[in-house]
Image (cartoon, rainbow, N blue to C red):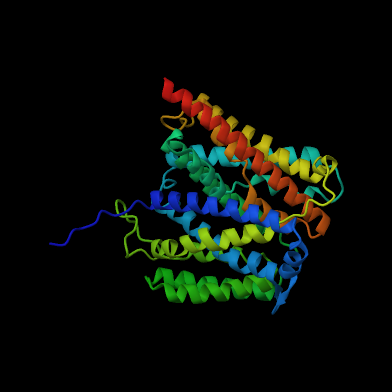
Length: 391
């Protein structure tokens, strides 16, 4: 007699993928720093600048491969909103409040430090992002010292945070727009919407149209990765309570097909291509320049104040309750981990500034802020976890 396997939890699979993918991302970032500061540094820079067709290698990674990252982000957002842990207002309340505050406060900190310097206000969104893979990867290293409720809280905050980041990229970092290309993108999206309404569940038509949408959006002047999010929104989903891996849901099938490629190949490749910064001529004065200091302070100070302050206020005013089974010290440690900006912060930094010197300062600020947030957050969680076990 055949044994019927119990369906896997999509959330558990997602957390495992993000955790291990985050560890791979950390290794890729470390490798980039080593290469950039070795005799291979010049070759690393030249390779990324080589043109293949209409774009450089770096732009193929940032604009094309990262569209698949944003496609996965969009699928995760849609799944959580329709059939997951953000499907009701009571579920959305705390992560939404925390994410909104966790984006606004870092932006305010950045502007207070760097906004007065001509040309730097454009980078206000850089410290507002949270890197879910990196943060979950750090949490994974702490094992059972972190309650499961905090892992879910961090994941949902980061997903809501991603929604805000996508909106910021679309609205704040788009310059000239080609009306004709944008019209073409609208027509393609309209066809996908009609297919969805007609009940078409085969993935191939959506993927072919999604590729056409990426080309149209790229030609329109809007950052091409937005096509990934739009495509995700138009992929059909079938509610599957109790069976999140049901084969009949096109969105779930595509999400699971992409997860490993994005976690173990695309995001680490992005990290390797973007985290390499030469420390030649580096000094403390470089790090306390307005741009890197504003980014680092936004991530370290702004994120913890924004996220922890929002959770504490929500609990005090009765809008929501803090994650079950977690102490306030553990919530604070998780808020610190939200300051790991890395992938999305580097991505937004690349959109905000084209000057090589400013790009270098962005990388320094993001790396410093993310590493310090990771160390501080893991330290607090480690100590608070030991305290919780003693009591």
